[in-house]
Structure formats: C-alpha cells, structure tokens
Length: 300
Image 1 (spheres, rainbow, N blue to C red):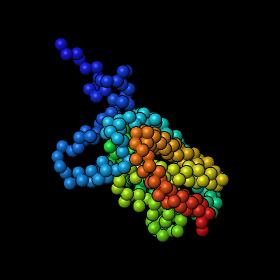
Image 2 (spheres, helix red, strand yellow):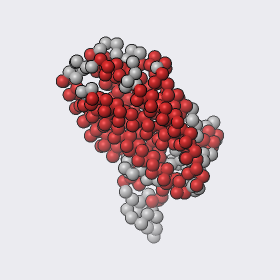
Image 3 (tube, helix red, strand yellow):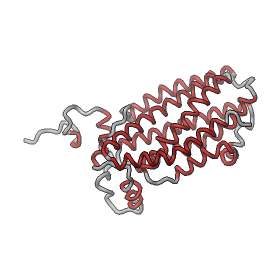
Image 4 (cartoon, rainbow, N blue to C red):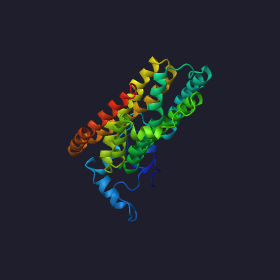
C-alpha cells in the first residue's frame, strides 16, 4: 500500500518538517524552469530579460536555495507592519494634538516644502521598480521579497503624503509646486534621472542591482539619516521617529538583497562579475542622487 504523503511533494526530500516559510514560498512560480503553457506575446520579453540575464544561477533549481533572512510570509509581514503602523499613527496623533506646526522655523519650513511633496514621485518610482523586479524574478521567494518591498515603498509614500496634508493645514498651498520642483529644481534632477533610467532598465538582474544595491541604499540613507537629523535639530523629533520607522523597512530591503546576491554569486562566477559591473555603472548616479538630496536641506 502506498504511504500517505507527509507534506507537499516538492518538500518530501527534506530531512525535517518544513517550516511555514518553506511551505508558503517554495516553487510557487509554475513556469520557472518549464516555460509558459502557451506561447504569449510576452514570452520573448521573459526569454530576453529574465532567462537571458547574466544574473542567473547555473541550474534553475538553485534559485530555491535563496532564503529571505527574515523568512517573510504574508502573515508575518502583516504582523510586523501592523505593529510599526500603530506606532506611527500614535506619533502623527501627537504631532496633530501638540500643534507641532506652530512656530516652525522659516528655513526648516522651506526645506520641508522642497523635500516632502516631491519625494512622493521618487518613492512611487522606487515602488514601480520593485514591482518590476518582482514580476520578472525567476523564483517565488525573490518575487515575494520584492513585492513586500514595493508595499513598503507605498507605505513611505503614503506617510509623506499624510505629513504633507498636515503641513497644508498649517500653511495653505504647501506642496502646490511639487511637480514643478520634481521636474525643474536642480537638486531633484539627479534623483529624477536615476529613477527614470531605472524604470527603463529591462534586464531583471540589472534592475535589481541598480535598485537595491546602488540607488536605494544612498536614497534611503538620506531620508533615515541626514533628513531625520535635520528634523531633530529643527525641533521635530516625532517626525524623525517616523522617518526611523520607515528606515527600518529599508534595512530589511538591504538584508534580503544581500542574501540574494550572496546566494547567486556562490553559484555563478558570471553573475558575480555582472553584479560588480552594474554596481560600478550605477554607483555614480546613486552618489549624485544622494548628494543632491542632501543639498535640498540647505537650498534656497
């Protein structure tokens, strides 16, 4: 008599009971390694920009060796973010209750107007880039990480939009020039060019490297670093705490990205060389973007 299955068929070779993370994330992309069931107009796109990317493991099954260091599943993500959002909600309530907008220094008010409204465009670009990485990823575990990262970018965008709404309450017309600043202010052109070029980068490996290993670390460092420190100096520690909470999301983005690069580099010298080439190519744009963001704190 045939023995009953102990677990899902693709996890039966495991010497131990599969974890919740392994059950929820293993081999969830049906087409990986076998192709689409029917020939579609998008098939050549995947063949060129996913399967043809030099950022690849030698064997398709090796993608399953990647592990998110946080072992993020949907339920775990919701639990983590719900706790963070409860804290941020309380911080915003304190800002509104205490009337933190009254008596704000004029120079800090001007810096906020240069940074907060246009930043929404930047974060939306980063969110779309993360979605593209998720769409093109050759492994379900990578796709899951990238999609949760995209959700984190939307969280950041929404919290900046909420902050903008509070500032508009104190200063009617605050943020009306957001698009003009994004398109024309000299200090926004480095970040804008970087994210627009990123959105036209189709090789999924290069898009991942440009986003998570070059641009985001420099951009995230500004908002969780220099911008947060400026907020404290300007007498707004509650806003700095909100920026720190948003920065915690970005720490995880760097962790899972680093784990993916290590996993692939161990298995493919070609992939390792491509990562270094892309990193060098994008580092100059990333540095320009970060430097120009920092200049917004002093610009007039």
